[in-house]
Amino acid sequence: MHPWDQHRNGYDFTVLVQAQPTLSQYVRPNAYGDDSIDFANPQAVKALNQALLKHYYGVAMWDIPKITDVCLSLGGLIMSIIWRIYWQRSA
Image 1 (cartoon, rainbow, N blue to C red):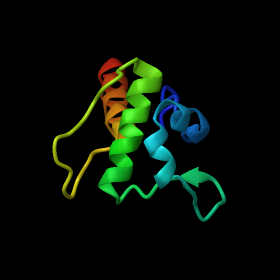
Image 2 (cartoon, helix red, strand yellow):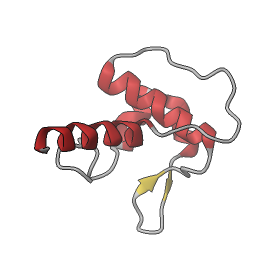
Image 3 (cartoon, helix red, strand yellow):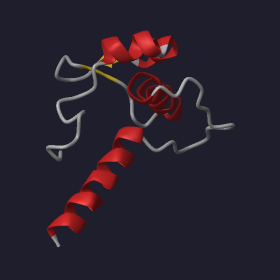
Image 4 (tube, rainbow, N blue to C red):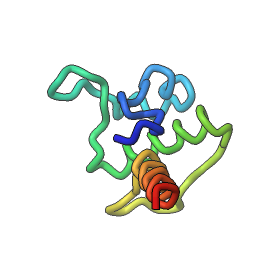
């Protein structure tokens, strides 16, 4: 993880569930005992994205009309943007 990534130490699921209560049905302890979601589950990733947008960016309503197989994690998208900025600045 990049040092600029505010989620490099993991997501604060307690805060995120408060922001988006539907996320709670997807949060479970992972193999290390930390709260997490199944990132292969598009509905779980969608709920996480909604919580991130609501809590950190003040976006009250965000939706994708139909989730089928893939829903890119907002955290992953932000990470790719951070790396692109980092590499452009260091070039």
